[in-house]
Amino acid sequence: MSFSLAGKTALVTGAGRGIGRAIALHLAEAGADVAITYARSEAAALEVKQAVEAMGRKALTFQADAVDGARAEAVITAIVAEWGRLDILVNNAGITQDTLILRMGEQQWDDVIDTNLKSVFNYSKAAVKPMMKQRSGSMINIGSIVGVNGNAGQTNYSASKAGMIGFTKSLAKELGSRSVRVNVVAPGYIKSDMTDKLPEATLAAITAGIPLGRAGETDDVAAAVHFLASDEARYITGVVLHVDGGMVM
Ligand code: NAP
Image (cartoon, rainbow, N blue to C red):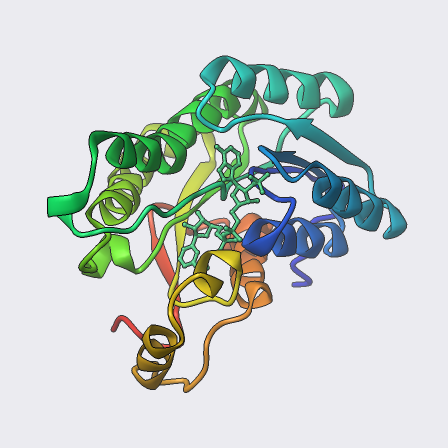
């Protein structure tokens, strides 16, 4: 009953900073060896590696654009070659490019769908083989409440996160017989670089509508991921766990 991840290995995409970083550190603290990918934040990713190693765990870093399917395959092959298994996959890498649909260009649509949704296909597909072979595994996709509720100015982002929910439920049904679980953690408003770029007034309005009365911390999301990654969550698959202070209920 300890939610220990000792002996497990994990991969977190886009984990040099923000929510991904918190997840990587949290999983390591719970006992897992942790591999992370980054796109641009090399120095930050190396700091995460050092922090994981300082906890006495093993760490690997990979420069990998999450949109690149061949690179995803290579990253997971390298982890399995090095550590022999992959127990936990956290699809965290994501971007926003917010604007109203009248102003949204095709590139803004494609970039957000590719980074937030195609990336989930890329890493999940690559992780399926080792996890099916092990007959165990936990995949956790970082969604958003916007994928459930929608949000003006985020048609691309909310479509990517809603698509992720359908993908997760379908894959959970495909892999259930092999004891591989697939779930979504859907954050609300969490303090990070992604939300720092929103105007003060928007942030104040969002916070006023949160039943728990505050913005979330990256660690609030990491704790939920930790739970779903653990064996204590062994009978949970295909769910969307909202970590949002009660914004969606
Ligand atoms: P963030 O601070 O902007 O961090 C985004 C992370 O994604 C960075 O580590 C970045 O890596 C990585 N990334 C972006 N594009 C990538 C690509 N093409 N390939 C690989 N990695 C890439 O955002 P965050 O708030 O931590 O968000 C993390 C996840 O939580 C996202 O999926 C986001 O949609 C979701 N989320 C966030 C909130 C919130 O309120 N913050 C709410 C709901 C959902 P580099 O720095 O190396 O580019």
